[in-house]
Amino acid sequence: MSRIAYVNGAYVPMSEACVHIDDRGYQFADGVYEGVSVRRGKLIDLEPHLDRLWRSLGELQMMAPMDRGPMRLVLKEVVRRNRIKDGFLYLQITRGVAPRDHPFPAQTPWPAMVVTAKRLNFDAVMDRAMTQGVAGSSQPDIRWGRCDVKSTSLLPNILAKQAAREAGAFEAIMVDRDGYVTEGSSTNIWMVTKDGTLVTRSTDDNILPGITRASVMKVARDLQMKVEERAFTLEEAKGAAEMFLTSSTSCAMPIVSLDGQKIGDGTPGPVAKRLVEAYKAFMDA
Ligand code: PDD
Image (cartoon, rainbow, N blue to C red):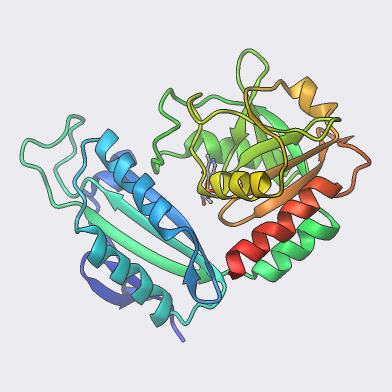
């Protein structure tokens, strides 16, 4: 069965899905996106994802191509048509088509919207989280000052992720000029101190406000865990009891080594494992 994409009002086979070459998303990465996990056919945290999408659009003075009600229907229809049980839904909105020129077009074009979905085996992701975890590689954070906007301009993230992969790691742990961890190239980063406190950078501090981050934080607080939102240095992270990352595709995933150095004993730690199980229960609820 061919995958089906939603493109500007129509559901089309992937092989026929295309956008205009003068689309500002193609020309300038002038667009925003969301990635939503799908578990047992259900879109996880859909409303917070839509809240974040509307915020990103507002910050870039872009229009939404439709209201939230129809948008929910389109997203669910893409999941249904692709027969996704466990998977990942991608939604992108760009400023639309206009002759190439940097400022916003004088006549506001209709925004272009694309939605795709693919399978993702969350049982395998959670199995990896419980048994193996992943390696991290520190990389300089060379991004701009508006990382709170979920923009499709991801070149610095791509370069960081690629450098991490070339170093044999799963994720780039991005570090600012002062030596503080910001976030992963496509994830939020956490550490667990020796006294069991969870620490993750504040979303007021030029990072993406991760939806999984927020849900994991709630799950942690429900488990009576102590959570602190503050910046921490790479050195502090390397000396932590545990580290983990969160994202829609990785859930909560232990980081068991950083720059080749073991974190804790180099295996998924007890705090992260409790969170993986609790987050799984949240997804399955
Ligand atoms: N990435 N930080 C960055 C820079 C991200 O790109 C993402 C998401 C996150 C985690 O956010 P959330 O929990 O809402 O997925 C943090 C998605 C998965 C992506 O780019 O594919």
